[in-house]
Length: 122
Image (cartoon, rainbow, N blue to C red):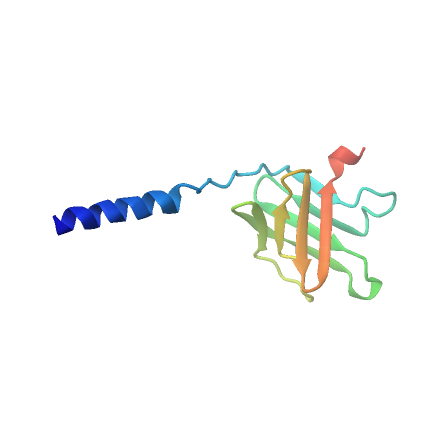
């Protein structure tokens, strides 16, 4: 009798714990170049995501510290994480896929960056 009560209590707790669980929707990645949809700004900062899991990232917003990095990327949930690269300065290495727009956003300390798929800007 005691085992039946414990089993029933365990099942009840398990049902309550998972009743609000909703699986995270896997967002699609658009392959191509992400940047700023403004005249002349696309050359300052851009991230190109290729289908073969390679990337090219440029950041020329600070002329004294120009960044031009290539490497590989991998998918982690709804994020693109840049791996296997060498950079003299710290770069945005984790880009979160926006669920409402074809954009990526990243944070490096207090520096927030949002790049949108440039194909949609034309």
